[in-house]
Image 1: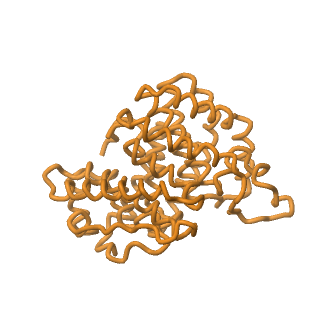
Image 2: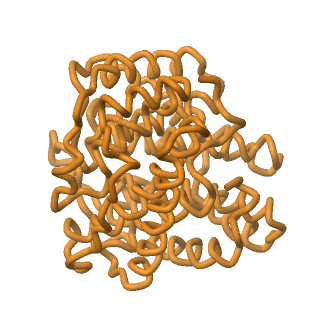
Image 3: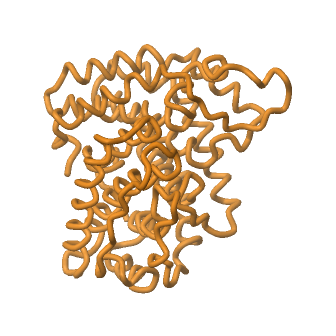
Length: 348
């Protein structure tokens, strides 16, 4: 699916679901170490841009989703939807506000590392690509460049310091963060950062053998450790090598059914993660199918499983509480706009 193939009928409800979350300050999850009394400030004073949507990273990737929807709507001729998203972004992503956001990072080297910063890098890259297509986005790209610089620097250092992958099914997963960051670096023309991330991905995952797909998912997973690693490797090695790697690392992936995991409690912020797992599995399986050789026996099954997961995820989105609605529209946006890719297919 190309970006231009996204349907405004699918994108408009996502934008409308995201919009009120951006200014919803409470409930709010505090996700940093306080060092002094002055650190205890209301969310809006700590984060002039990313104070809503329950937590910092959800606000960041909600802004990414609006930027992506704006581009997809423009490609589909839905210029009113593009204008709606662009107006929101222009009103929030000012140079002054981003500078204040960055002030918060000054003495917090681990804040939102890796998940939130990876989405921040992708947001900045999305705006840079949008500015190439539409000059009205250039102020947004310029205002967020310092955020991109900080995010890419910290994420590269983080990846270099990792002795082993972080194979969790939540925010700390290293593979998911590395994919988002690699795409951002590539789209922003940061060739050295993209090359270093690819080097680290190979070092961390090329030796993988018999990943424990049969033990997935854990109760709180919103992303698959095995699929995350495969998605990352699909960006780093040629198609034939990817097929051989899968035979070693996850031989059952794409050959045996991956059961759907519907949410068991959509009021519980952690148990509702399974609704997001449906979305992330869907876009990872589709990307993996596209990266494998056309002669391989797995792509057809992977695409069918991806579609089944996306259909189930769409139903779950319609039944979600705020425990899911503050972040699930972003994951739906990834699926409906064809993935996270920003520029033409990267070289393998």
